[in-house]
Length: 479
Image (cartoon, rainbow, N blue to C red; front, side):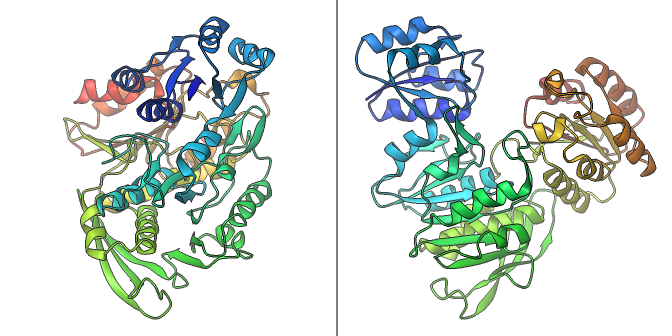
């Protein structure tokens, strides 16, 4: 088959291009500002793309033979290539639809969904199944740990682990991506309000997840975070068995406690003695892992429940997870000079940042935590979760906030209330500064860090973007 991918430079679309090329399909595409590592990976795979958007490249590709145009979900109407495709009557599709057509048919879809933990749980589950020799496939929405690519095909009949993103599909289909995946095993890790540009309320998110649960066949399985009331609520009318994991006593897979360490944590759990009869009895299991924090304990239990579903031995599970470091930018650690320790994390929601800070507090109870936060999502740039943000940021000992991403798109009374945040954090003795450019933010940070040399201070970067290269700059100055 022949595909032209509009918006090829993303992790998901670039990985799709590479996977289709490996399957023997002819692939072309376009994007603006494709940068490493995806630009390097595409070149290594022999995939060529057009820099920038114009109809010429697509027109030439279409003239050479019948083709399908895969439209990235960030491509809007008015894009010249999209307009050409529509005017020319070319077949349009989306990334989730291609995944369903080419990778999920005649496989066992294992969909890892929820507003937190999707990437880590899907990456970990795929890694465990692969290490157990199940010839599984996977699609993970980030730079993976252990796996050699974010997207890989499975043999017929094998499990295919896929990150079930609740974000919209494409300009003509505003449903969540996960509706295209038809899970036979569904992992629902957490559920709360997010993506304020897509969902207007928590009830809209609940409705989407209720419909997702309703897609699981009676012979399938739902694995749900039993510590999250909203996640449990959307599973109430499931037609298949529902098994709970979490730290509460109501969970079949129960996290008892965690012993944090500098490199490894030990998660002590109660789990089913016989996975085929999960309610028949339980036994204690200690999971040694580089993944730390209660939220990662739940991720580990979810992956264990997936492994149990497919007959992976406990011995093989423990061996696989011991040195699994997690996908990129999930608590990436950098040791710097003068006693500084830097962690870089993808967290961009109040709950996620709270979990990261709590995990670091347990691991380093004597260190001050200085937080650098970049607000990029609609949920963080606006005041829709103002109170939750203020409470999350107050968990640090000092906060620098970067520029509000694309602030010109929002009315002043909708934007994140910086004055309110400053007052709240001041009442909790947490110094707070927000800077509209990285240079002034760094100037302020340098003055503060200079006075903290030798105090074993911990720096934490939280952003779902690059934060204008902040991590690289801090590592260069303090590395």
